[in-house]
Length: 137
Image (spheres, rainbow, N blue to C red):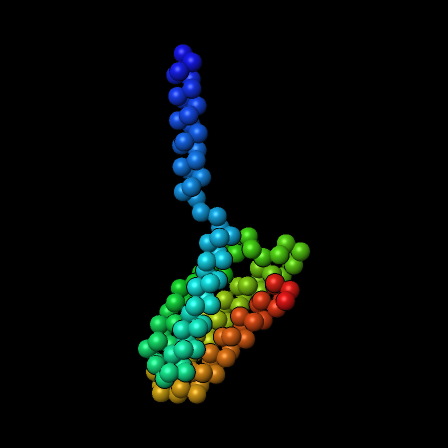
């Protein structure tokens, strides 16, 4: 009886630890998304500096792939609790990032590299604005 009870307890602990391992920490996932956003911005900049419109578009695609994390409820996990407007501000920032990145691609397609680089500047301003306001830099 004791062996059965011990085996059951051990099995329960193992199953519990497996379930805990399957659920990633939302904070870590969101921070990973933020690093991906930074990588995307670097890729867009690199493409602009080397006149590679394809690299810029790949960077935009990478950036836009991460915006859903800013638009979701999960972003509240990393936002400061004392700032009531933080969630709405994050959503607005995501909207503006999507708007400027779409315009960047349209500018590239129209052959207006100066406008595309101006769109990149606006993207960077959105990132900086969010970090200044929400992260209290």
